[in-house]
Length: 199
Image 1 (tube, rainbow, N blue to C red):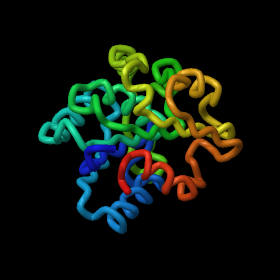
Image 2: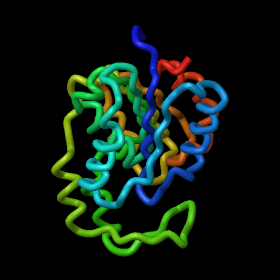
Image 3: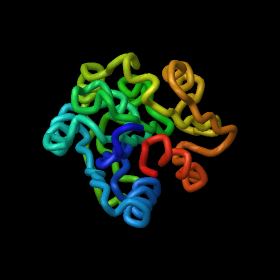
């Protein structure tokens, strides 16, 4: 990459948090290998519209060059949306088992939910959030080659075939096994970091 990566935004998935195993591992990697990197991993609100507003504010002073995205599950869906924003139109993105149809898949979760990492944290997933997901959905177009989709055939929550079809225009790392949480995330960190220009 011509411009060194100076900023990295990590987006967690549904019912997840910055305390997820992958988010923590990525934060630790940044501290160890790229302490100069500006790393952000915010707690995303359950409302997709509110999440977009938060991310807009969080990255308002980020440069138009040198940024990278990483998102897991619903966070991968969000990263796909952000990759089309003017600020991120030259950014690379790594999508970890990205949600393809969250408006469809999350309908069954309308109601009170708990956080995976801390069941004491509760939130209410409202019916109108489905409309918000539909409103921000974007095609994979100009960003396709800038996105590396990491897709596990062993994903127990999402259909790997849908992910493969959705991101077919760009590079794909297709894992024969693994799981939705990518418990073997550590094994792929060097390759993913290289793709994002993190060194």
